[in-house]
Length: 247
Ligand code: CTP
Ligand code: MG
Image (tube, rainbow, N blue to C red; front, side, top):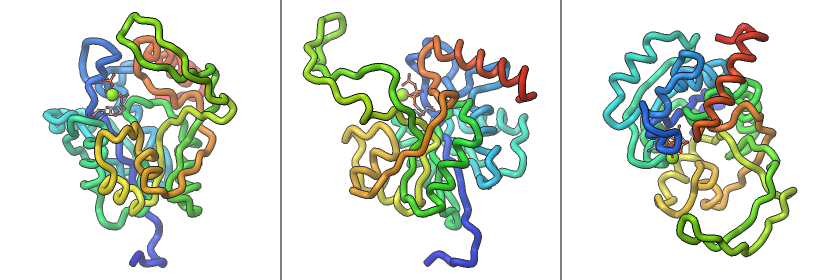
């Protein structure tokens, strides 16, 4: 039983073990730089910027944990404690390895993509606040700009028949950090089998049948996926450095 007199402890797990195939050839995506600083360093700072976050667990490429540890040791992240663990073949496996490294006294867990280096601290705090006030799973999300079609997938280059258009007003594009009551997230990872189509952690919780809620996301929490996203990220960073003294 949790001790009610003990303060709530919040940790962030940052999956950073992906290769970044869609970004093109080069170093693993999390180690590519933005404004001269590795994306992962920005992502760790974004989590450590929240006063509530006392531990950050970085999930490094499977054979790259010592290098990532050495890289992070060159930077400072305030009061937050830092752990580095090796990741796995899939994002779900990488998150699982991060969760396995959490000490027993952590009650609230954020899972944040290293590929979203510029999420503002207010978004992080809003997610944490919603979990602390009782929601077992919280995702930041934004309304869509584009209309979305459902299609019958065909091989690349072939025209794909449209099978429907979901009502855009009912859709949200979800971001990270996603926040969870620790027990709920562990149960979801223990129960839901890889490959059942969940592409985020909240998706695993949904499969348990537990409630998931959305809080407002932020346009600067976008995921760096393709080369054009790097151009946007550099521009956002340059604007921050010019206006708020962000490093
Ligand atoms: N990730 C991970 N372990 C994996 C795959 C992905 O920790 N085996 C992490 C990535 O490092 C990233 C986050 O999950 O921070 C979101 O994944 P995505 O944006 O798809 O990154 P990559 O898988 O690296 O990119 P791509 O799919 O283009 O290869
Ligand atoms: Mg991927």
